[in-house]
Image 1: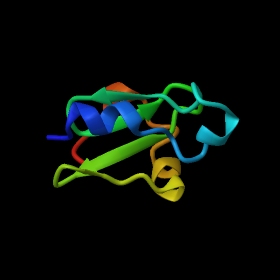
Image 2: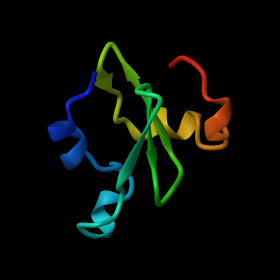
Image 3: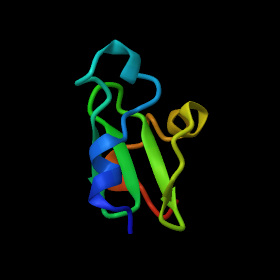
Image 4: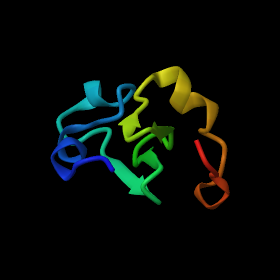
Length: 70
């Protein structure tokens, strides 16, 4: 499980440059981080968020309700 302290500081790497409140992430089913601004979806594998823009791009068009196991 990803700690709340880590979740509090993580931001979408594609959006964070847009300001301190940009790129906020929502935790979905303990398996995904979803950017509120760009809708990139970052998987969490073995309790480690994979925060690579290319990885987030893979799932950008997948609706949250259709996200499966990363």
